[in-house]
Amino acid sequence: MASVMHAIPPLSRWAAGLLLALAATASIAHEGHEHGAMAGKTAAKPQLATTAAFDQAGHLWVTWAEGQHVVIASSDDLGKTLSKPQRINPQPEPIYTDGENRPKVVASPDGALYVSWSRPLDAPYTGFVRFSRSLDGGRTWSAPVTVHHDRQPITHRFDSIAVDGAGRIFMTWIDKRDLLRAQAAKQPYDGAAVYYTVSTDRGATFAPERKVQDQVCECCRIALAPDADGHMLALWRNVFAGQIRDHAVTTLPVDHTAPTVTRATFSEWRVDACPHHGPALAVAPDGVRHMAWFSVMQDKPGLFYSRLSTDGKPIGTAWAFAGSPQVGAQASHPALLAADGALWLVWKQFADDRMQILLRKSTDGGAHWSEPASVARTDGGSDHPQLLARDGRVYLSWRTQANGYRLIDITHAASGGQS
Image 1: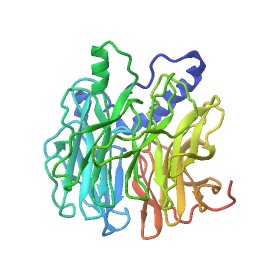
Image 2: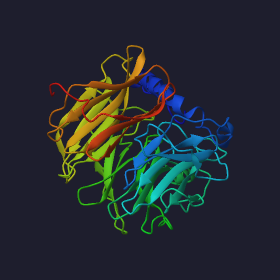
Image 3: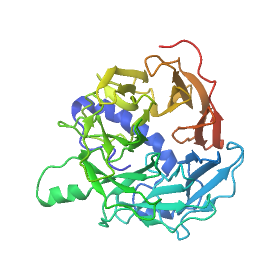
Image 4: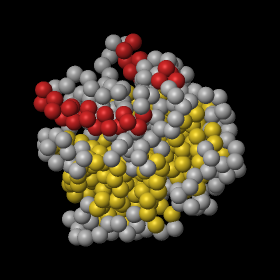
């Protein structure tokens, strides 16, 4: 696993053991694709790392990797059957397919479909961020392009992609060009940087990339979500002074103004390691920013939830909604969705010798939540959960070794008292 563990301070050694356990569960989904181009030469077979999206017409699109090809399939019956997978990249290339670094599909309000992924290079932990588009409803796809101008054989990976209400495409990724500069100047530098680019012409071109923030965690996904005013927000695990691995948030400007970065979480987790565990972000219609993330707070690992106001100030205190003081309590990889006047929160938790997806729901803006309800389970390997909404219903998108891809209606799954 890339940078899962470095030198661990004694205070955090037991927490590092939990990180390794969580990373090991994530490794089921990528099966060795973390270490450069040679890893992409494994036998062609479906991977578990899968992303899905509904387009404006209500069709479901599902993308994943098969060998050295990103493939996509569609469904008109809510995932019960999928069309024959279509190759996005006609020419084979290695593809990162771990839980945090996977092919992704998003649908634009104007009907376009966009797919992104990270391509490993020959050296470990290096890569390029790739992109393809379909402007004809998924019938044909453009030749893949690299979205960043910097072509050094370094880390450009862990890409995220989102589209705002105006159809502009935002792409972010983890980038290590500034680490190289610091090393050349013999200056200290922790982690990597977040970079981003924007396309205003439906992916025909991308603006030169811009740096958002130095010294961020190297292997955690970046969460993107448009705010109530249509601006794109980015949330990532940052490296604050003293190796504090909390989160930061910013609005990604379309023009040339500088991003204003704000600290978003305050768990004060001090660990010189990357947990391969990015945050989840959802913005409600009132503009409040809802976040869920993994951390270790007061020496206890777990999943935490908190809120930020429209001006970036914390609302209340962080709440541990899953996990326990015991090291073996594996609660991980939350997903958040604001839809149908409610907040939906799911996560993975290993209990009773099987992996489960648990759900909590809030109908009062995150002040109170329903008791956890199990909405899916499996005995074998599984991907991270994703939440989708369509026509007033909420769905869990999940892929497992035992059952393949499933889209599960969870609209009425949450019930019981609120906490």
